[in-house]
Length: 437
Image (cartoon, rainbow, N blue to C red; front, side, top):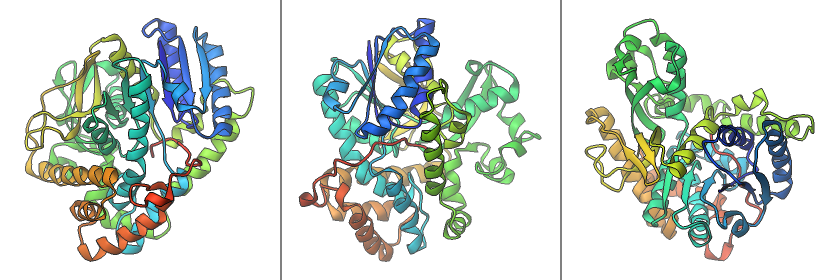
């Protein structure tokens, strides 16, 4: 069995390799070949060398291949994971800073910055998916970890690809609560529902007993304060928001922090440089602790477990981005929602979701409308649709800002947007890099 990672030069890759190695060693996933693909040969060489040392230490029975040729990398694959960043961290910095100049929040997956990232990313991922469809095993699965996951997954599914989106928010909360209650992770189930980076946990069951009231009405609530929201907010909602909700519900505070110079991209660039220097050490044969500060906690577990379910049909429980088809009432059937699901070789089967209350549903509906337009803009290069997408985005909305903001976002990303600028082409130097943080 062959599994391919597109964006294999990511600093996350060693963690992913450990996840697959553990399953191969346990006999739960029979992997003959792991392929790491990246367009940056130098970076790939460093990461792949560490990956090989990890596999040697763990006794991996298959072989590791590194490749800069996409067709070779995906040919015959049973599953392809996509984890890339078009334009690298430099593009991320513009996503975070340009909206600030218009008095708007800058972030890599939400708001105007997330929109710019979607424009760069969707066409590239669709091109990769077309090669997967042509060359991989019939029925091969695509697992997308590339942000903005909901938008990218929607684009993949609308193009007819066999694809699911993956985020680490759900598994991160699950593991956190498992530690809190001192139980194995698989004994914890979350009532996790919404969109990618726009979700809420409305139940936390341990062995079938809902412990959320105990969390919200007791001292455990203080441990959740901070990025998830204030204790009073969580009590009012009777739910735990994804930490991305603070961009929508605490916008002024976050914007003030950004305008004072606090941007995640700069910190990530420094962390990645240090990680790559560590990876180049021939004595290193495990993921370093510094990787935890990069973000993406439990990514390897989530990704390796999901691929295992898709390829073996084990029916395990996961938190995935999947076509709605009535799972969340009030959203179109073709919306991509993030929910708990059982997963087998046929795909994800969402578990029932109680109707969302108005304050949640209204926001989810608004962002879904934006995502529909974002995919249309990314695939057509239509400036009018792009402007409508920004108008629909709850973190933009003001038409007087939309037009100049869109002009600047398009211009700074010109070389990555052939749909908008056909004569610009696409730069071969655009580097797939990790997504998270």
